[in-house]
View: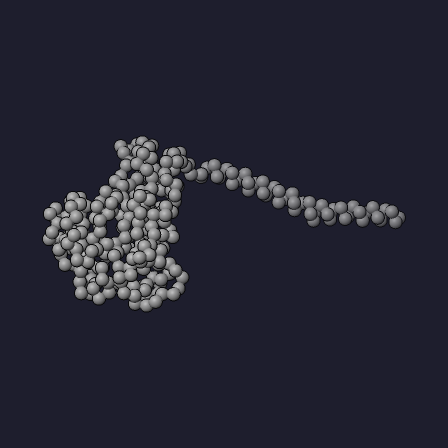
Length: 282
């Protein structure tokens, strides 16, 4: 009797194990298999085909992911090019030869654009009055958060080197003597990173073969500029009057150069009393 009872107990325990553990596992496997099949089927139905041109274009881009084109990276820019939402001229780091190759892939006539170079439109630095002593974290973006930076000129270069820090090519540095950021034209690819990162928005790109640029961004009246900076543009108009090509004019109290007209004669450089029009050898 006792052995029969034990056999019944074993059978009952085995059944409990089967229904408690094995059956749920089997059900889970069946459900997982069904879901996997469904996902594979749906994925095949709804997948978005990637245009092979995107990879072809990406191979010819500079690959630095600088963001100067306005896209999240080179691959995103390649997608935008293929879809017609971007232009090759938006990318400066990519060589003219590679742009021509990309243009051929896209079925365009040509991709080379005029080479540009970044310049800093400030001549103040150590010659610009400080409105407070900044002692926080040492970059321009951090300093800007404290009352717009430490310079009395609202668009004065703070010389704390955010542009230098973010430049992938080592083309930007801060001159220790002047306290102003400067760009090495030989290294600059005009990617635009320094342009976008500068909190004062005083860095722009000009034609690489340009010979002069205005190293000031202050649009105040002359006497107000002089109250904060020794080297700022005072809107005297001498550069405009002396330019034989009529390539420079005053706009909102600031000298502006038309590079389509400029002959690089240097007349504006020689007559500027603030010495804020600089020669630039591209």
